[in-house]
Image (cartoon, rainbow, N blue to C red):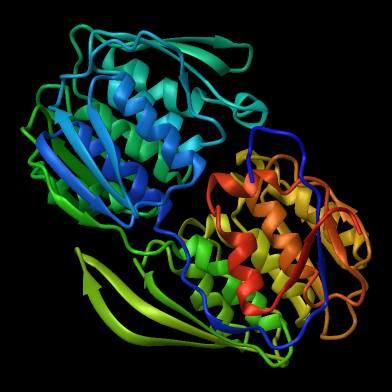
Length: 450
């Protein structure tokens, strides 16, 4: 599947007894950061288990454009020979980040404190997303940004010739914004401070420390204070990428709502800033267990076993949990449709500015499928109909959003009538084996609109 080609409609039909082992791809967040930090190191970084979806491949191409040597060795093994902090060369071509908000924002931050200029673009979805939330703090370092109306791509970033360290309080929980500021701070002299009122995924902090940066994290009255000392010499690493909990969400949720299912999803990263969905599912009564708990590369890892769970109850998801599961709310709303009672999801304004307005996209699709949904600017409530009571039988719009497409295909596995997604091609950006993996478990997903 391609996120940039002709539309690929897909239809998912009711099935029973999903069974087997779901080997989901490597973690996308860690894959992006492995390539970027490898490019900023002095020497050769080896990466195994890299997610080879379009988003990450676009980041690999970007690192080559900035002067790093990036080589695909096959089988998920990659080699990156870095240029060091401050060593980026000015790219000769426009940097195309495809569908990836994470990729473009992290790369903008990485180059913003070097005296070079780069122009960024992406697909239709990415070009509709505002970049001001990143370019505003980058301006504090001395970088300048020139984009379309509303701070949208295509956009040219003129890096700071004489960058200065900054202290920045992230206005809304966003790992992308935090990470962009920290990556910019790498090439600024002195100490850059980032303050989070609510903790977000901390892969950047963990990986910066692993690459040898001087970085501290403290809890203070104003929130979580991250202090980074600029201009370090990062040391190359051997990285084993754990499997992606955001990708694991789809076979896990499919098993929970599909009668007779028992699916094992091995080697899933359970970083506490990423595992909110699994906690929430268990609170709803899902039969979801952690097996073989261990630690790999500084990250907690486990095998997840998910079984059909016919007694799900709606709950109020704590707003403070939103940052740890922001990408999983679409598929959670699908599970909530089959629960008894209401599931409330609040403090999720971030969903309005993802690849699509995910609250609006899911609310309209769920309503069309026969589910009652109420929504506001930063919240939505799904009124579950219980198992066997969700009609389905409609075509929904993916809006060039991979998670919307996968969520409705999961939903079709348990609705009374099939669910069709108008364009499932964006799935390739994050989960290129979704179609074949779900088929191996016993799903009934076909290409076409019937």
